[in-house]
Length: 196
View 1 (spheres, rainbow, N blue to C red):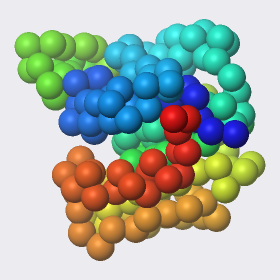
View 2 (cartoon, helix red, strand yellow):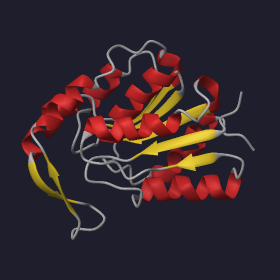
View 3 (tube, rainbow, N blue to C red):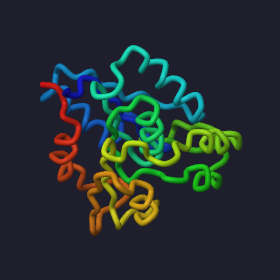
View 4 (cartoon, rainbow, N blue to C red):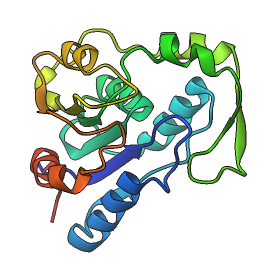
């Protein structure tokens, strides 16, 4: 069954204005007008972010009818969403242990796409991230991870170990932002199987 509903989850300090989110949005709008696209601005609280996502997903088909794409912290969230709904997930340099890695970012943060925009990353958000750890993948075949060995933020070895058994596209170089994102779109679209 083709994917009729596609969710995109951005990373930490990111937004729906990210290059990858914008490219995916334009691609869906031009090539797959039948597909429902949603890329929300996620609040800094992980618990609140996933509550808002799941509230909207109540009206979506679960399993084969929907898919989620997540970048960095959004990849961690996407793994959790896929575990809850049984849908497919595409993970772009996904965060594996954000409760460990984001502890050093407690305090006021700026948005990547608008430095005038700030938010406060609170200490309790670390525990909220721990609570969202999805555990072992129940259906590894539902996951496709694009992982760059050149990622300057996350360890590619940790990412590949986390998604063992899933489909993995391991890039020899690259960077955390996946600046060569266009090169990976054919494989991503093939995996998502979007409705036409």
